[in-house]
Length: 234
Image (cartoon, rainbow, N blue to C red; front, top):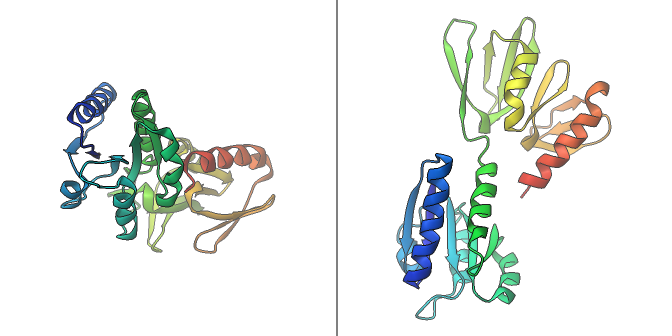
């Protein structure tokens, strides 16, 4: 995980960096930190997954303007706005800020890190036993659904690629459930992230495919889908 800090006051920059380092080491999370004293310095590279950005910087720099430049350039890093003046936090809606952090309460940095890591829950590769006897690596971020296909399982990817594996759907559903997948009916496991529409009878995935919701799964699905949307919806 690449973490950026843009803070012109060294004392605050060091405090924030210490909180991040302690949290990541305690959790065993690999990390890199780039700490900058100005937005201009950070923007030379602008390489971060999560950025802690002071709103009020020296030499007339405006943190909100820096965040806006990142957003307009297509940079997908999440921005946590830092401020000693909490009344400025309300302006964060302009740049779709991930968090607003009061410098007097740096424990909020830990909460931001924990919340950000949850959004990365599908950043992993799983392996299944292919029908030809080879192990197949599957990126969960690109996995749309899993369905039964005769005595095999068919893994359908976002780009239309298919992988066929020798597994049981019940066991696969159990192993995928911590990562945002739900066993929606006897023959299907769907990625909750790629559900576009839902009603009481079926879901519509981002590729237009409709999947019926099994009656025995309906209540549990509604609960899990709501929980997912609360945690991860943009």
